[in-house]
Length: 381
Picture 1 (cartoon, rainbow, N blue to C red):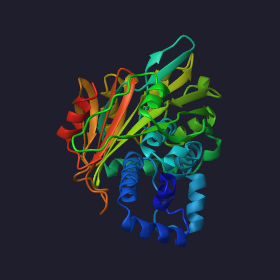
Picture 2 (cartoon, helix red, strand yellow; picture 1 turned 60 degrees about the vertical axis):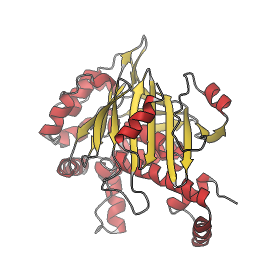
Picture 3 (spheres, rainbow, N blue to C red; picture 1 turned 90 degrees about the vertical axis):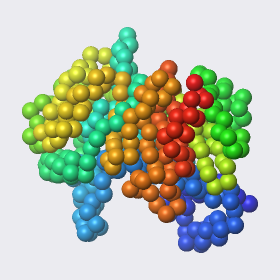
Picture 4 (cartoon, rainbow, N blue to C red; picture 1 turned 30 degrees about the horizontal axis):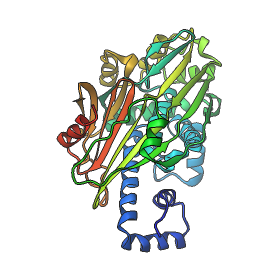
């Protein structure tokens, strides 16, 4: 008898008893199918860790439990982002199943509230400004940059309570449900596009239901932090009490297998952030980009993004991510062949992300090089 993916994810997350872990470990030695599922889930974990490692930094190892707890309450670099992460994870149970979708939501929330890189931007509607992902692009950032930002956040946030920055509410029950091809096509409002990888079995299809997160900022508290960090550019007072809404639409995941090799394709409408009318998004951008702690080379990269209202930026920490063209559209390929976070069991997990006509596509696989990924994407025009 095979284990459900939720149980295997709990096994990866070390949430089971010693007895349960021992039973699953014994089963994995004998079951190829469960080993393949576990390998796929491990790949999802690696993806999320790569996306979030710049924004969710743990306290130093030498800190005591009491010091860690205090730091989580008083320091922005662990406190606010830890709080956001937990709120997002609590509402997005999909984090335990398919973390690539949760990464999109969590990373957007973290970027937006931690005043780092603009998340999802787009067009003005009659009553709301709606930001939608239309492009992806890499941005180079190194460990020194992270340390510089962390130090500034820590010093500034020591004078501010992170509990007063606002609140996040997540609605919508996250589920991952097996579906037929017919059910999958009916669950979305765009054409489902599936590649035909040679040597792989027919895909298993899953419907991943959407969710909505609402963020309401306490502008006075946020500006107190910015001032503590030496900023003279502050968020407009008109933002106080305004609610920003982020919606993650329903997605379809297709899982292909060929022996020990796995391939996953996820597609969904672009996530969007709705901003109340009258909000000056340029003033927000100006405040975020003028934080003194922001390294100059990083600030220049952000300012140089031509179409910032439509672009999601993917951090490139170790030179493994690069901009590519996918079916005529900008995309990003994340090469897993020599990534520093590879583990003994998860070498060679690579990813290709792009957008076309309002739909976001993510393709991941073991031992997937750039040419192979682009070839598969070419079957999804």
